[in-house]
Image (cartoon, rainbow, N blue to C red; front, top):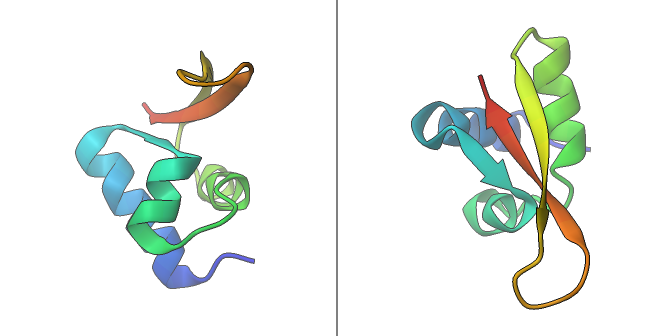
Length: 68
């Protein structure tokens, strides 16, 4: 479960840069699971859209979350 500090750090990052990925969240605040934080922010009323992006070095995709 994400703590309030991680939640605030992710929100501040989104407000400044508009998008975030799981890797950026891990580097920013040691957050291993970004999706629960995004869900909490959505429940608080933030308009966050999920974009699927291709991985650059491997097959598959990852999520990039965008604050509208």
